[in-house]
Each structure stands twice: as structure tokens, then as C-alpha cells.
Amino acid sequence: MTCSLLVAAALFAVAPLAAQSLAERIARAPDGTVHLTYAAREGVCGNGAGMISFDCENGNCGRRRITTNSDWDDDTPCACDSGPVRLALQVTSGHVTRLRSYVGGHWKPAAAGVTDLGTVAAPEAARFLLDLARTGTGRAAEEAIFPAALADSVTVWPDLLKIARDGAVSTHVRNQAVFWLSQAAGDAVVKDLRDLVDDDNVDRDVREHAVFALSQEPRDVGVPALIQIARANKDPGVRRKAIFWLGQSNDPRAINLFEELLTRP
Image (spheres, rainbow, N blue to C red):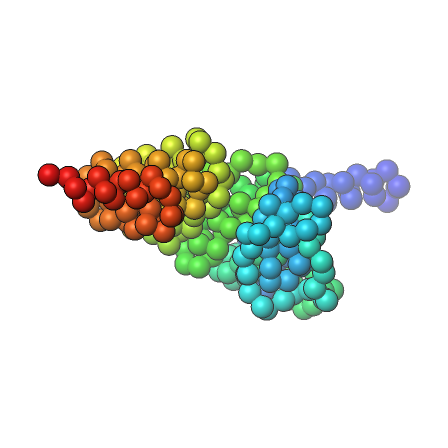
């Protein structure tokens, strides 16, 4: 075979792989663990093992931290790294059954039963994870929300809001969507959380999680939203949740509301 034919044959062999979506590549992986890596959004860092922090600056970990798990897949834990996000997916018969998320660090050399897909585009990873959250089952669907929220160069909160409102999605997944929706601070998100609380078509458990999410927002936006819910929401259980979280705020406006409610004729 001539050199040109060899090159053409090689390109033909590579092209189908390059054209495959991330979901297709994962589905075609043999049973076992699939590793993939993508860029973390600004302000996210981790120790490469079980700790992920937010609002990080200049190599210093932020105050908000999440401990993922202690089953580390990397070598010696590193200092606070600004990325990448590393995912370990457990795959059986083409379906993802569990996920583990890390930020920073590096993988051990791939052992038997491990397929390493290398670095993928962060928006593609987020899209795969959000689709898994929406259409997947069991723990994998619930665990997919968190790493999607870590992805760089993508705005995930509109998708999280859709998932939170989708009655076909499990309550556990929807609650995860509400929590991470609350982390995407901003007036628009607060308004959407408040609208979610007021939507009678949404399960009470999800609406109560939205109340909690509002309690985690900065006081200037969270407290007024909770006061409005405590005064006007039609569901007594949701109103009680709002009052409870207002009681944890130590905000003078909450005290004024309590006086108003207790002295109401």
C-alpha cells in the first residue's frame, strides 16, 4: 500500500471516533471505570482528592468547601489547584451507575478496567452530565448535578431550573438542582427560586428545598424573598419553612416580621 493510501486509511479510521459525542464514547467503553477531565470554572479549586472549594483566589481555598469522599484516585494530595475537574464514571453495559468528582491532582496510571478519555471540552462535559441528571436513574443521575456546576465556559442555572421543575425527574435529583441553582447567585436566580416556591405544580419537598436555597443567598436578596414567602405563600408548610430559616438569619427584618405575625388581629 502506498504512503498516501496509508494516510487516507488512518484518517478514515480516526474520523468516526472524532465524530462521536462524549455520551457515545462513554456508552461504548467497556465495563469498568471511565476517566475524563475538563476545565473548572473560575473560583473553583481542590486538593485533588476529597476536598473542593469555591470562591478561591491566588491559590488560596475559599470558605465554602465540599468534601466529596475519601476514596482517592490520585497520588499524594496537592495544594489548592484551580483545576482541572476529574470525573471517574462507573460504567456497566453502556450505562453510568456512579460518579466521583475531583478538582486538581492527577490520575494514577490507568490500570486494567480503566478507560481514560483524556481532556474534553467543559461545555460538552456539562451537557452530558445535565442530560444524565435529567434522563438517568439512581445515584448517577443525582451525582451528575454537582460536576456539571463545576464546568468552565458554560452557564448551567437555566438547565438546573428546568430540571427542578420537571415532574418526570426524581425528587432527589430535583433537590440537587435546587441546591446548585442557589449557588449561582444573582437577582435572576433568586427570582426563579421564588417563582419555584410559588408554583403549586411543583412537589412540596422541592419547593421547601427552594426555600432553603433562598436562605443561603446573601441577606440583601435572600431575606426579602423569605419574608415575602412567609407572608403570602398559600402553602402553610412552605410558610413555616420560610419562617424557620428567617429565624436562623438573625436579621432585624425577620424580627419585625415575627412581631407583625404575632400581633396580627
